[in-house]
Length: 184
Image (cartoon, rainbow, N blue to C red):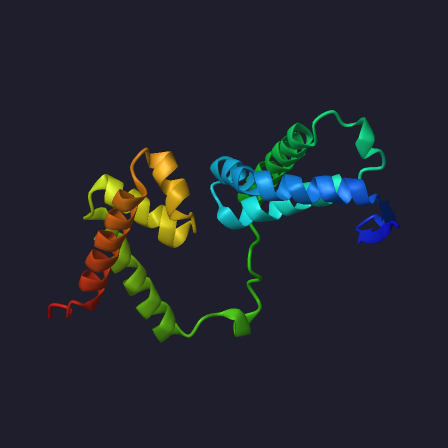
């Protein structure tokens, strides 16, 4: 009995039950490694998860999965190619940032809120500059980039416990600096 899977551009693909079982096993055994690999390439957990999901969709929609020698190797190749595409897209966006329209006044922030937010951002930047390099790096990777503790530990080549220590110290420092009353 075949299950039907609707995939973008390939509506109603017949999914062989044996292929479905191999994909489920592949997912169970290798998804963590795939996401970790992609996170290192993309520097973003959410992007890594999205690219991994897209790679699995491509495996599901294969017309002749029996012709692939190693689904794991093919999965990682697909994911690697998708990651390169994602990085290229980021570069294009960075080279051509969207400009807000000059005439659209309702998009402009309220001046007081803008000034307060700018001041807070500057204070946070100062607080981060005061941190030791490893502490600041671990905090930025975790709190801003959204990286998981384990991935940060691998990238920085320190234990997960040390990553948690650095992140906690940075958070405490930033909170203390942000809560300090301003000097007149």
